[in-house]
Image 1 (tube, rainbow, N blue to C red):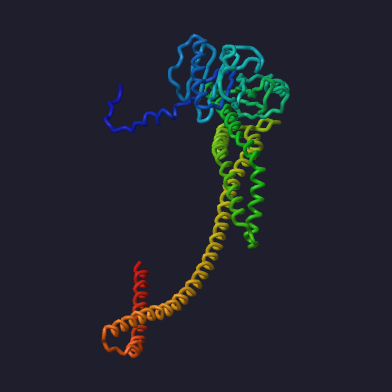
Image 2 (cartoon, one colour; image 1 turned 180 degrees about the vertical axis):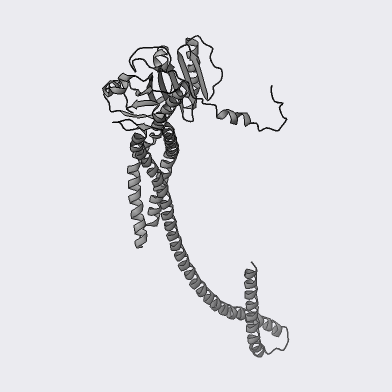
Length: 435
C-alpha cells in the first residue's frame, strides 16, 4: 500500500537535497577484482569533451550511451565496470575488471579490459593513476612478505589491517614501472559491500593526497620572493622606527610594489592553499574510517600520511599565513608612511600659512599707508577744484576771500575724504565676512 500524498509547499530543491546523499554510492566488489583509478584535472571545455569521449566508449562496446552528464555515472559492460565522478576541479574514472583470472597481481588491471587507444585519447591532466588488486586471502600471501614485495618491484611497503583486521592493505605510495601506483587488498572476512567501501576509501585517500600536494610547488616557488620582501619591509620599518631622514615618495613606491606582488601571489595561490586544507581534512577523515591495525614490520597508512603528508600541508599553510601577515604589515607600514607624509605636508602648510599671515599684515600696513597718502592726494585735488571754483566766482564779480575760504576748506575736505575712505573700507570688510 502507498501513503496518500499531502499537498504541502515543498522547497524546489528538496528532491535534489535528498538525492545528494546518494549521488556517489559505494561500489560492490567481488572477492577477485582488478581496479584502476584515474583522476584527471580538467577545464570546463575538456570536461565536455570527456563526456563525449565516454559516449564513444559505449559505442565501441555496442551499448546505449548516456545523453546527459551526471555527477556520478556507473555502467557495467559484461566484465568491465566504468564509473565516472565529476568533482569541483577534477574528474575521476574507475575501471573495474570483473573477469575471472588466475594471473599474478597487476599483470591484468582495470584498464586491461578497455578498448585499445581509448584511454590515451582522454583529455585532461592526470594527477592520480593507480591500480588496486583485490584478492582473497591465502596462506602463501600471509606468510611470505617477499611474495608481496615482489609485486611492488621491491619497493618499501606501507601496510595495515583495516576494519579491525578484516583485510590487509599494502602499498608503496610510489610510481612503478608502468607509471601507475599500486595497492593490494587481501580480503580475509569482508563482504562484497564492505570490500567496495574499503576500496573506495583507498581511492579517495590516494586521490585527495595528491590533490592536496599540488600547492606544495607553489609554496616553494614563492617562498624566496617572500623572504626578500620580508627583508625589505623589515629595513623600511626599522628606518621608520629610528626616525631617520627618508625619501617618502621612494619608500611609498617600494611599499606599493611589495603590496602589488603580495596581491599577485595571493591571487595565484589562495584557491590552491584553501583546496589543500580541504583535501587534507578529507584524507584524515578517510584514514579514521579505515580503523587500521598494525601489520608487523610496516608503517600503517595513517602513520605514513601523518609523517609525510602533514608536514607538506603545514608548509603550505605557513606560506598562506605568511602572505596574509606580510599583507597586513605592508598596510601598516604604508599607513605610517602616509601619516609621516601628511605630517610633513601639514608642517609645510603651517609654514606657508604663517608666511601668508606675515605678508597679509605687511600688505595691511602698506594699505593703511597708501590710504593716508590717498586722503592727502584726494584732498589736494579737491582743494584744487575748489580753488578753480573760487577763481571762477571772483571772475564773475563775486567778492570772495579766496585764501580764507581755502584755509577753512582744507581741514573740512581732509576730514570728509578720510571718513569716506574708512566707510568704503568697512563696507568691503562686511561684504567679505558675509561671504
